Length: 133
Image 1 (tube, rainbow, N blue to C red):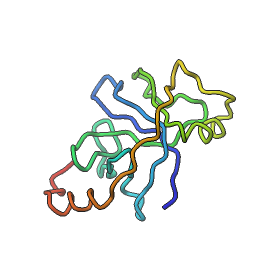
Image 2: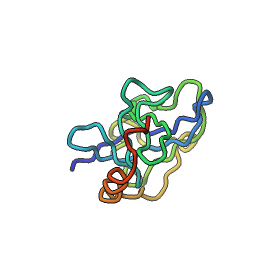
Image 3: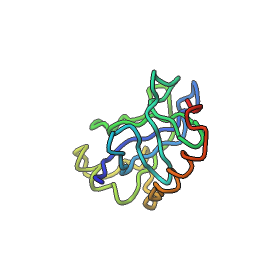
Image 4: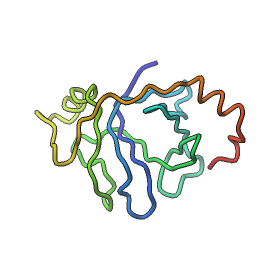
């Protein structure tokens, strides 16, 4: 399954300053589920309160989008550093046309976890998934 570079932000309500990451994600065949850092995120139907996806296990809302070329990925009202996985740095620099990482905005971290799709599938088959936002 092809990987793509994405921006992921955990929505924490009005502050828009939740944890944020830039890294490679995988998508389901339909594109409605995104797998990232050990988690699975389903597209919010009908729109979420502040996110466009939700964690299928916790229900937490997340904003998942393409990485902006100008580098301003955070919501305009949000703040905080963004973690970028080390294996995504080269793709990020190429995408944005930058020569180096802005360490005032981004923190380079070890590669994120691969999502165990079988674990997610088992969870969804055993839970009341339909009751999740």
